Image (cartoon, rainbow, N blue to C red):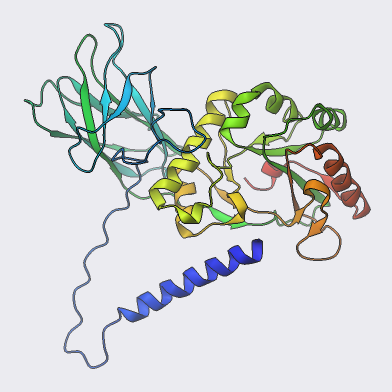
Length: 376
């Protein structure tokens, strides 16, 4: 799987080079044509509200957005496309706030815009490192009006929260064509291991459909530092289980997308919704924020790396060995090596799979270690 992913990346890189060469000025041309400035990258997740609820996500959820209670819903009364966001404050004590978390660069200026319709519509950003006055309107006069605000992130700011809301006791508002522009974070770095000469190996466990007490007991008894990549749906069935298996120092919960689809079959916008929503599920349940993405099936492309970065992921991680369901595949051949990443899955054989992985690590003189200590 890993070699296939690498071939895809190589092919994508080659295609990019050919595209650049194909647009170079012809020899002996009188004058090269002016190159138009590249448009600023779009950073908002699902700003047009066109992405339907993701497979395996909560029914009616809006990809990329989180609204108070049931106060946010998709409507067909759109400015462009087929969908927009309708925000209806549920009571006189609510504004119907909808939010989105976005990764940013420190010390960078961003512009946040949205088209709104209705009375008392607000947009703004928090967590920027500076106070940001909201943009708002008392009324759009029945039509659509664009609101816009600009903010500059602080020297230590790596993420901000965007918000949209109406006002207390007021009627519904509609929002469409949300846009955030500015410098995007550097693409997530793709790796299959954690390069080190330390005598360590890393245990990673994916998905979460089978949650056996035997595996949880082995992890707890050995105090194993494990990195779990659960999907939000099975994670939500038994959140305490994932808390228990990641209780040992050095353990963490990381991102594996929402629906476990091959991300390379999705657009950049869809990939970003998959990754950001999985991140938000972990943050909401456990209070920690993932920085690693394990792409389903180890498949990824340049869009995956960009989308992952916009969701705050620093690394895109595959693996060097697979010990799932009785397997013992070391992709580079030979015994395990320092820095190897072992993939396992939450199956009914996880306890025995873990034991075989530990035995292989011991034979190679390696000890399980905290992955986030090496991929910071």
